[in-house]
Length: 265
Image (tube, rainbow, N blue to C red; front, side):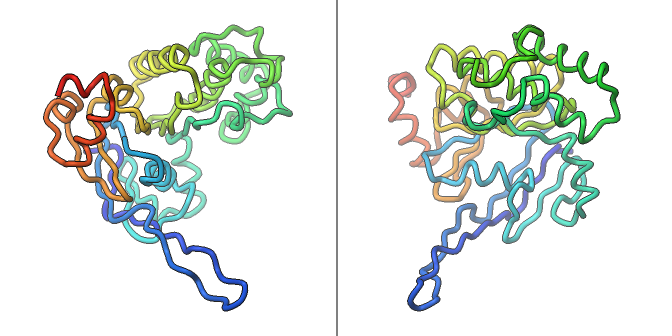
């Protein structure tokens, strides 16, 4: 059974209301009748241009925003029907790594507090046990315990993203939505983060939804790739097969726009 099951998921946003007429000027189907499965232990890469609905889909799956219609199951549990208590229990197993390593960390908190916050909310650990867990998490992402008493602004972008990853791992989740986690980083640092994600997947048995506009990054990290265009999933397939023999015109255009791949198709 798939860890994550999505069926006919739709999110419609109303456009702005006129101050003169009080009428809505239309609507946008940010996610339009999407169905997909994510198998336990795999990385499903979700790729598409900016505005295609990728990040909205990731947030819908986590119930960070509410769907207009459709079904989401996580580990067999219906997340749409879940009440606040049931959803809170599921959130231990579902975490997110945000795109912006600068804006996603509270600048008022030291690193120890940033990483320990989920533990305070969800686990009954004493201060020393939390401190030990934070030290373990920092080592797992390639930082040492000297980082604990420093503030986020004292770190580089790549280091901040490592801190964000440590926070996402704090509750030992099964599933992580990585929402463009390297797009704000330079190429070399981004490559280090991608390799770290692969290492952590093996170490902790993680399942990823990896969202990106970069086909080479998605191909490198993913087991399968889903291509999103104007709110719809237009193609899904094994990573190597999809990039070697795309079936949809939009997938072909994405591949052709990437020089590294274009020369191989």
